[in-house]
Image (cartoon, rainbow, N blue to C red; front, side, top):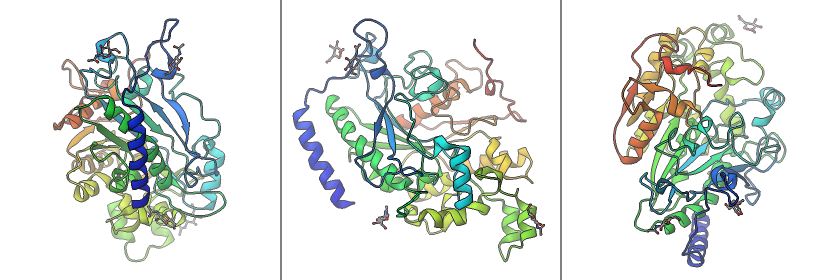
Length: 423
Ligand SMILES: *[C@@H]1O[C@H](CO)[C@@H](O)[C@H](O)[C@H]1NC(C)=O
Ligand SMILES: *[C@@H]1O[C@H](CO)[C@@H](O)[C@H](O)[C@H]1NC(C)=O
Ligand SMILES: *[C@@H]1O[C@H](CO)[C@@H](O)[C@H](O)[C@H]1NC(C)=O
Ligand SMILES: *[C@@H]1O[C@H](CO)[C@@H](O)[C@H](O)[C@H]1NC(C)=O
């Protein structure tokens, strides 16, 4: 690790030396209209990093977008009114689940093939065919739709390792679990771009927002170590809360029988980790993934993945943390069969409460909202401009404190959970 960082620093120094007048790309195409290469996030393979492999052995990849200059001064990367910021997003929080044994990994490759490989990744990052508008949440280039973050630098690391980005298994054949190597490779590759962006805005802060699920949150200090040392790092735990069933804990702590297991969770189903309790899959999973070295100072084994906000604040109180999760998260409800939605809500509220900045809507989906339209469109109260996840991330980056927690009761009682479809 030390050797790698020293090498990287030397490399960057040389790179900066030859690129003192970094030109930002133009947002507009020469013939008129927008230039997708500047406006959208483009695919960049990580094939230079031999260990950064997807479950099926294909090289992992990331998507990157620099800040572009446009006709509006708000788009000028040298001059922006909005804090210039790198948003680095690892998958969709815990949303896409994981696999935990040979059968569930094979089922995952069959049922969710796109989550186990990099082959077939499109050239531009998009949601529902939209690569620069409001469907991609914080990545949107719309000044009106995404006022806090449209000029940002953006990176997205697709999740293809089925291991919550914590695996470090050295198995030579598929399934591979190399999520740790993927996360480190992605940040190492981005670190060069971050140095260049800092050089192009002398005297300004270099803000880096790391967004991810439970596995990324456990590794924050290892990830921090490959970023430029001047970067001001904040963390967003986006749909990252996993919790065990406390009554099951008591019933099972001594010596669980098969009957106890059946009583306290669903039978796990195919490749769907949310068809059962975390305790039914994660103990085997972290062994299969060789994940324990990702947990740093946390010595609780698989439980290091539970209650990520509290653990992160306990380990790194100096890194400002935002935690976001819908209070009626559908995945949490489906994995805790015996809990009522209001009990799940109480448990998620408790888990979020450790963070410095809190976003909890009374919605059931999406679990991770950072790169979804819900980032701007799920609102809290009727004020103007409306308060949203976006407002809260802006406060986080500026060092403020915000708590956005719905008080209405019932799944989707916040009317903005299900916005009217716009044709
Ligand atoms: C679009 O931008 C890229 C660089 O970001 C540039 O190489 C390309 O020539 C531009 N295309 C047009 C049509 O302006
Ligand atoms: C910033 O960039 C814009 C667009 O490229 C340019 O018009 C402006 O003069 C630049 N300002 C400074 C202070 O360099
Ligand atoms: C537990 O559930 C499994 C699968 O649903 C079933 O085959 C088994 O008989 C159950 N065992 C007990 C003790 O209830
Ligand atoms: C991952 O495993 C390799 C080989 O066992 C080891 O050298 C490396 O230090 C591990 N990575 C981390 C982050 O501990």
